[in-house]
Image 1 (cartoon, rainbow, N blue to C red):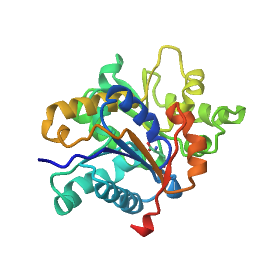
Image 2: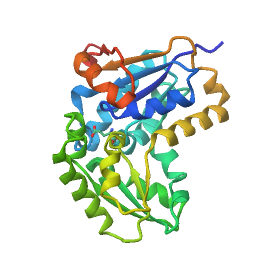
Image 3: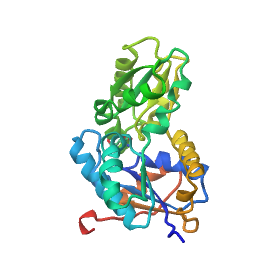
Length: 277
Ligand code: DGL
């Protein structure tokens, strides 16, 4: 009999909680462990090598907790670390374990939202520079034209709880203007960073009427449900009795204070010291 364990959900900090929330709504029967690497966030402006090393360390920690399946609920980690982990590390660590990201399930369907076939991507500098979205979208929707804008200040605004302030409007408008000026045919905006749903009201305010704004939480949750259906051997390895555990690599007091806004309910996290692993 297979040993069962929780599903691991990883983000550089808080953003992945917006994804976890949708996953738990869709698949409440499973156990989950969430890890936010807040002590080393943001990842968005870090090099490929650094994001890869940090993400790999966290994935290995999830495996030690008994997870067979880990979701990188972070676009930056999905863009910069996922492929190397899947292709180089998993075969050496344990080829029966799986690590999935948020880019694939999103790019598989994003073209369906657009009538003009012009899609705008908003993400961190790391995600945008990786060109993961244009490359992946081209595989599923070769007729879709993709435009990108990096918004390096949006994550710090959210992490410092300034995202609802009047001052945030300037930076939201600035990046939306940059993106929308690339083509007036853009009719879909993808929030390709798991933090950005917290800015949704301001984004709507500065986006032309009729534009469809797409967040990833529900898409990733549906993708996971579909994956578990198609892979019963993996579903078998997901436990269903302990609920959700939360870990942060930084202060639990700060984490617990911030998380309500991302997850929609109060939580009590535990501290993880990765250097002691
Ligand atoms: N939540 C991460 C993402 O989806 C961005 C946060 C960060 O820069 O660490 O890309």
